[in-house]
Image (cartoon, rainbow, N blue to C red; front, side, top):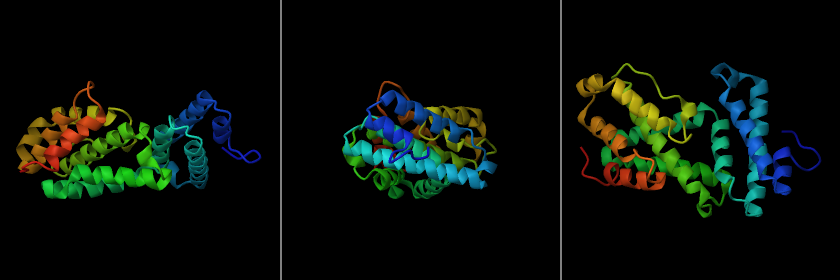
Length: 231
Protein backbone atom coordinates (compact mmCIF):
# COMPACT_ATOMS: atom_id res chain seq x y z
CA UNK A 1 0.00 0.00 0.00
CA UNK A 2 3.01 2.29 0.34
CA UNK A 3 3.89 4.72 -2.44
CA UNK A 4 6.57 3.83 -4.95
CA UNK A 5 7.59 7.05 -6.63
CA UNK A 6 4.42 9.09 -7.06
CA UNK A 7 1.99 6.17 -7.08
CA UNK A 8 0.52 3.53 -4.80
CA UNK A 9 0.02 0.03 -6.27
CA UNK A 10 -3.72 0.62 -6.69
CA UNK A 11 -3.22 3.96 -8.41
CA UNK A 12 -0.59 2.42 -10.68
CA UNK A 13 -3.03 -0.34 -11.67
CA UNK A 14 -5.61 2.27 -12.61
CA UNK A 15 -3.10 4.37 -14.53
CA UNK A 16 -2.23 1.44 -16.77
CA UNK A 17 -5.93 0.50 -16.93
CA UNK A 18 -5.31 -2.93 -15.42
CA UNK A 19 -8.78 -3.47 -13.97
CA UNK A 20 -8.02 -7.08 -13.00
CA UNK A 21 -5.11 -5.97 -10.84
CA UNK A 22 -7.21 -3.22 -9.26
CA UNK A 23 -9.89 -5.79 -8.38
CA UNK A 24 -7.26 -8.13 -6.88
CA UNK A 25 -5.93 -5.29 -4.72
CA UNK A 26 -9.45 -4.33 -3.63
CA UNK A 27 -10.11 -7.95 -2.74
CA UNK A 28 -6.97 -8.04 -0.63
CA UNK A 29 -8.07 -4.88 1.18
CA UNK A 30 -11.52 -6.37 1.81
CA UNK A 31 -10.12 -9.66 3.12
CA UNK A 32 -7.79 -7.83 5.47
CA UNK A 33 -10.64 -5.75 6.89
CA UNK A 34 -12.99 -8.73 7.16
CA UNK A 35 -10.47 -10.66 9.23
CA UNK A 36 -9.92 -7.87 11.76
CA UNK A 37 -11.21 -8.65 15.23
CA UNK A 38 -12.65 -6.06 17.61
CA UNK A 39 -9.47 -6.08 19.68
CA UNK A 40 -7.38 -5.43 16.56
CA UNK A 41 -9.04 -2.07 15.95
CA UNK A 42 -7.26 -0.45 18.92
CA UNK A 43 -3.77 -1.57 17.86
CA UNK A 44 -1.44 1.14 16.49
CA UNK A 45 -0.41 -1.06 13.55
CA UNK A 46 -4.04 -1.63 12.59
CA UNK A 47 -4.78 2.08 12.71
CA UNK A 48 -1.72 2.80 10.57
CA UNK A 49 -2.69 0.20 7.97
CA UNK A 50 -6.29 1.40 7.83
CA UNK A 51 -5.08 4.96 7.36
CA UNK A 52 -2.86 3.82 4.48
CA UNK A 53 -5.74 1.84 3.02
CA UNK A 54 -8.08 4.84 3.09
CA UNK A 55 -5.37 7.01 1.54
CA UNK A 56 -4.88 4.44 -1.24
CA UNK A 57 -8.57 4.32 -1.96
CA UNK A 58 -9.14 8.05 -1.90
CA UNK A 59 -6.24 8.71 -4.25
CA UNK A 60 -7.48 5.98 -6.58
CA UNK A 61 -11.03 7.33 -6.40
CA UNK A 62 -9.87 10.80 -7.37
CA UNK A 63 -7.90 9.36 -10.28
CA UNK A 64 -10.75 7.10 -11.32
CA UNK A 65 -13.22 9.95 -11.45
CA UNK A 66 -10.76 12.13 -13.32
CA UNK A 67 -10.18 9.46 -15.94
CA UNK A 68 -13.85 8.38 -16.02
CA UNK A 69 -12.96 4.91 -14.76
CA UNK A 70 -16.27 4.62 -12.96
CA UNK A 71 -16.85 0.88 -12.97
CA UNK A 72 -14.89 0.35 -9.74
CA UNK A 73 -16.33 3.27 -7.78
CA UNK A 74 -18.94 1.19 -5.93
CA UNK A 75 -16.24 -1.28 -4.88
CA UNK A 76 -14.05 1.57 -3.70
CA UNK A 77 -16.90 3.04 -1.67
CA UNK A 78 -17.73 -0.34 -0.13
CA UNK A 79 -14.13 -0.88 0.94
CA UNK A 80 -13.91 2.65 2.32
CA UNK A 81 -16.96 2.04 4.51
CA UNK A 82 -15.51 -1.29 5.63
CA UNK A 83 -12.26 0.42 6.57
CA UNK A 84 -14.15 2.78 8.88
CA UNK A 85 -14.86 -0.18 11.14
CA UNK A 86 -18.02 -0.50 13.22
CA UNK A 87 -18.14 3.16 14.21
CA UNK A 88 -19.80 4.59 11.10
CA UNK A 89 -22.30 1.75 10.66
CA UNK A 90 -23.21 1.74 14.36
CA UNK A 91 -23.75 5.50 14.40
CA UNK A 92 -26.05 5.35 11.36
CA UNK A 93 -28.02 2.43 12.81
CA UNK A 94 -28.65 4.50 15.93
CA UNK A 95 -29.83 7.49 13.89
CA UNK A 96 -32.12 5.41 11.68
CA UNK A 97 -33.56 3.69 14.77
CA UNK A 98 -34.60 7.11 16.05
CA UNK A 99 -36.31 7.77 12.73
CA UNK A 100 -38.11 4.42 12.90
CA UNK A 101 -39.40 5.22 16.38
CA UNK A 102 -40.97 8.38 14.98
CA UNK A 103 -42.90 6.37 12.39
CA UNK A 104 -43.57 7.83 8.96
CA UNK A 105 -42.81 11.35 10.17
CA UNK A 106 -39.25 10.23 10.88
CA UNK A 107 -38.83 9.11 7.24
CA UNK A 108 -36.46 6.29 8.16
CA UNK A 109 -35.72 5.20 4.59
CA UNK A 110 -34.88 8.75 3.54
CA UNK A 111 -32.75 9.13 6.67
CA UNK A 112 -30.78 5.98 5.86
CA UNK A 113 -30.26 6.94 2.22
CA UNK A 114 -29.20 10.46 3.16
CA UNK A 115 -26.53 9.03 5.46
CA UNK A 116 -25.13 6.78 2.74
CA UNK A 117 -25.20 9.54 0.12
CA UNK A 118 -23.51 11.93 2.51
CA UNK A 119 -20.69 9.43 3.04
CA UNK A 120 -20.40 8.86 -0.70
CA UNK A 121 -20.41 12.55 -1.54
CA UNK A 122 -17.84 13.32 1.14
CA UNK A 123 -15.50 10.69 -0.27
CA UNK A 124 -16.32 10.76 -3.97
CA UNK A 125 -17.47 14.30 -4.59
CA UNK A 126 -19.36 13.42 -7.77
CA UNK A 127 -21.28 10.44 -6.43
CA UNK A 128 -24.58 11.55 -7.96
CA UNK A 129 -23.02 11.29 -11.42
CA UNK A 130 -21.90 7.68 -11.03
CA UNK A 131 -24.62 5.27 -12.10
CA UNK A 132 -22.73 2.26 -10.78
CA UNK A 133 -23.17 3.57 -7.24
CA UNK A 134 -26.96 3.65 -7.27
CA UNK A 135 -27.48 -0.04 -6.61
CA UNK A 136 -24.83 0.00 -3.88
CA UNK A 137 -26.43 3.04 -2.23
CA UNK A 138 -29.82 1.34 -2.33
CA UNK A 139 -28.31 -1.87 -0.90
CA UNK A 140 -26.66 0.08 1.91
CA UNK A 141 -29.86 2.04 2.57
CA UNK A 142 -31.94 -1.12 2.90
CA UNK A 143 -29.35 -2.71 5.18
CA UNK A 144 -29.26 0.29 7.51
CA UNK A 145 -33.03 0.24 7.95
CA UNK A 146 -33.11 -3.52 8.56
CA UNK A 147 -30.22 -3.37 11.02
CA UNK A 148 -31.83 -0.44 12.83
CA UNK A 149 -35.18 -2.22 13.07
CA UNK A 150 -33.51 -5.37 14.35
CA UNK A 151 -31.47 -3.42 16.90
CA UNK A 152 -34.75 -2.03 18.24
CA UNK A 153 -36.22 -5.54 18.34
CA UNK A 154 -33.30 -6.76 20.44
CA UNK A 155 -34.34 -4.41 23.23
CA UNK A 156 -37.33 -6.69 23.83
CA UNK A 157 -36.31 -10.00 22.28
CA UNK A 158 -33.30 -12.08 23.28
CA UNK A 159 -31.73 -12.70 19.90
CA UNK A 160 -28.52 -12.37 17.94
CA UNK A 161 -27.37 -9.05 16.47
CA UNK A 162 -26.73 -8.80 12.76
CA UNK A 163 -22.93 -8.57 12.35
CA UNK A 164 -21.81 -5.17 11.15
CA UNK A 165 -19.53 -6.73 8.55
CA UNK A 166 -22.61 -8.01 6.70
CA UNK A 167 -23.41 -4.40 5.83
CA UNK A 168 -23.89 -3.67 2.11
CA UNK A 169 -22.58 -7.08 1.07
CA UNK A 170 -25.32 -8.09 -1.36
CA UNK A 171 -28.20 -9.79 0.49
CA UNK A 172 -26.35 -10.93 3.60
CA UNK A 173 -28.22 -8.58 5.90
CA UNK A 174 -31.60 -9.51 4.41
CA UNK A 175 -30.92 -13.23 4.85
CA UNK A 176 -29.81 -12.70 8.45
CA UNK A 177 -32.79 -10.43 9.10
CA UNK A 178 -35.33 -12.94 7.78
CA UNK A 179 -33.63 -15.81 9.60
CA UNK A 180 -33.92 -13.92 12.88
CA UNK A 181 -37.53 -12.92 12.24
CA UNK A 182 -38.45 -16.57 11.67
CA UNK A 183 -36.43 -17.82 14.63
CA UNK A 184 -37.95 -15.35 17.08
CA UNK A 185 -41.44 -15.04 15.59
CA UNK A 186 -43.28 -15.99 18.78
CA UNK A 187 -41.32 -13.56 20.93
CA UNK A 188 -41.74 -10.77 18.38
CA UNK A 189 -45.49 -11.31 18.14
CA UNK A 190 -45.81 -11.36 21.92
CA UNK A 191 -43.57 -8.51 23.01
CA UNK A 192 -42.97 -6.01 20.20
CA UNK A 193 -45.20 -2.96 19.76
CA UNK A 194 -47.55 -2.56 16.79
CA UNK A 195 -45.45 0.04 14.98
CA UNK A 196 -42.24 -1.95 15.04
CA UNK A 197 -44.05 -5.16 14.05
CA UNK A 198 -45.49 -3.29 11.06
CA UNK A 199 -42.05 -1.99 10.14
CA UNK A 200 -40.52 -5.46 10.39
CA UNK A 201 -43.25 -6.89 8.16
CA UNK A 202 -42.81 -4.08 5.66
CA UNK A 203 -39.06 -4.57 5.49
CA UNK A 204 -39.45 -8.27 4.87
CA UNK A 205 -42.11 -7.78 2.21
CA UNK A 206 -40.58 -4.95 0.22
CA UNK A 207 -36.94 -6.06 0.30
CA UNK A 208 -37.61 -9.62 -0.79
CA UNK A 209 -36.84 -10.82 -4.28
CA UNK A 210 -33.92 -11.14 -6.67
CA UNK A 211 -35.89 -10.18 -9.76
CA UNK A 212 -36.02 -6.48 -8.92
CA UNK A 213 -33.24 -3.99 -8.35
CA UNK A 214 -32.31 -2.74 -4.90
CA UNK A 215 -33.34 0.72 -6.05
CA UNK A 216 -36.90 -0.35 -6.89
CA UNK A 217 -37.19 -2.28 -3.62
CA UNK A 218 -36.04 0.71 -1.58
CA UNK A 219 -38.44 3.02 -3.40
CA UNK A 220 -41.29 0.61 -2.65
CA UNK A 221 -40.23 0.45 1.00
CA UNK A 222 -40.08 4.24 1.26
CA UNK A 223 -43.63 4.58 -0.04
CA UNK A 224 -44.82 2.57 2.95
CA UNK A 225 -42.43 3.48 5.78
CA UNK A 226 -41.90 7.14 4.84
CA UNK A 227 -45.06 8.12 2.99
CA UNK A 228 -47.72 5.61 4.02
CA UNK A 229 -50.45 5.88 6.62
CA UNK A 230 -48.21 4.42 9.29
CA UNK A 231 -49.18 2.76 12.56
